[in-house]
Length: 319
Image (spheres, rainbow, N blue to C red):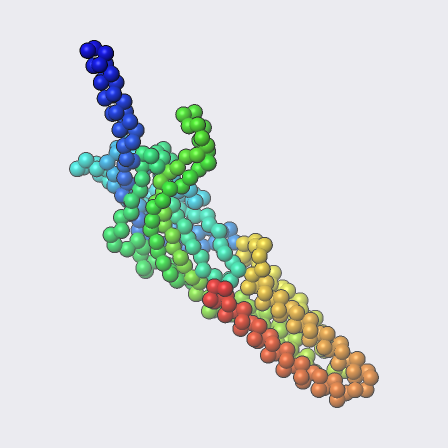
C-alpha cells in the first residue's frame, strides 16, 4: 500500500514538473510611435530615429528598463520613462533616441528604395519565457515628421524569433542555439530624386555636351577639338569621383557607374572621330570629313540619349 502511494506521489510530482516545463511563455504587448527619422548618413550607413516605446506584461521579472536590447542600434539612449504596476500588469512607456546601422542598396541611386529595420528584444529572457505581440491600435509614426527627400511607401510592425547559434556561455545549454523573441519594425522608403538627380549629374551632361560641340568645329582646328574633348573627359571623371565620395563602397555596377561609363565612352568616341576627321583633312577629303562629322553628330546624340533614358527608366522601376 505504501509503495503504491509513493508511486502515485512520484507520478503527480512528475506530472506537475512536466506541466511547469511546458508552460507557455508570457506575452509582452508592444507598441511603437516614431516621431522623427533624420540625419540619414548614406556614406556611413546610419540614421537617427526618435520614438516612443511602450510594453505591457504581467511577469514583473521582465525588467525592460535594464534589459532592453536593440540589436541593430549603434547606440541608443532613454530620455524619459515611466512605470505603472496597477491592476496586476506592468506598463512601461519610454522615449528613445537611437543611432541605427543599416545596409543601403545603391544600385539604382539616386532612384533607390531602402528598407529601414528596427528590432527590440529582451536580453535576459529567451523565447521560451517571453514572446512579443503587437499593439496595432492607431498609426505607428507621425505623418508630419521630417524625412526630407524621402517618401514612406509602407510601415510594417511584426513579431518573430531571432536565432543565435551560441550558448552565450550558459553551461546549462548543450547545443549552441538560443532563440529570442523580437518585436520588429520595417519602414520602406523611396527617394524623391527629381532635383537630386540633376544636381549630381548636371556636370556629367555638360561635359558630354562640351565634347559634342567638337562635331561642329572644323576638323583642321586640331587644338580646339582635342582640347574640348580631353577637358570634357577629365570633367566627367571628376564628377564621378565627387558622387562616389558621398556613397558607401559597392562591388556591384551601379547606375552612377553606368551613366558615367556611357558618357566616358561617347566622349572618347568624339575624340576618336576628331582624329579620323583630321586624317581626312590631311588627305584633302574635306567634304567627306564634314559629312562624317554631321552623320556622327546625329548618331552619337541619339544613341547617348536613348541609353540614358533606358537605364534611368530601369532604375526608376527598380530594375
